[in-house]
Image 1: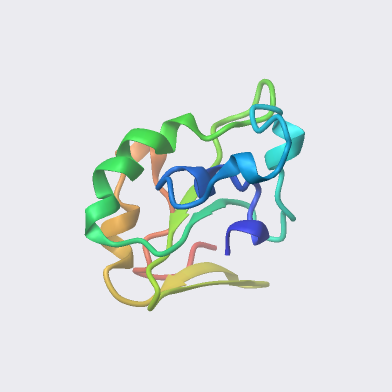
Image 2: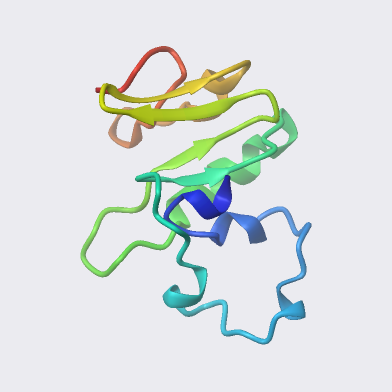
Length: 115
């Protein structure tokens, strides 16, 4: 899911992956750019234990100069992100809890399509 979004930056958040196995400057925006198939960034394998980490890091998602911070969509192993001509939606369990943010930072909630 991460590579379908705007950035792979969230892959480093949990500490599961060792970025040093690839000799690259991971602070360079070009190195963390993903495929851009979806207009957001993904945090896969979300579980309640990651809630504080997500809340702390979501504002730090890199954004192009002068643009708004990137949208973050948390996905559990039992959820899916679906988008098409009618909008985008998170489907599955507990997805709404993971997406909760203050009003000014709302992201898809899984409660219905974002059109």
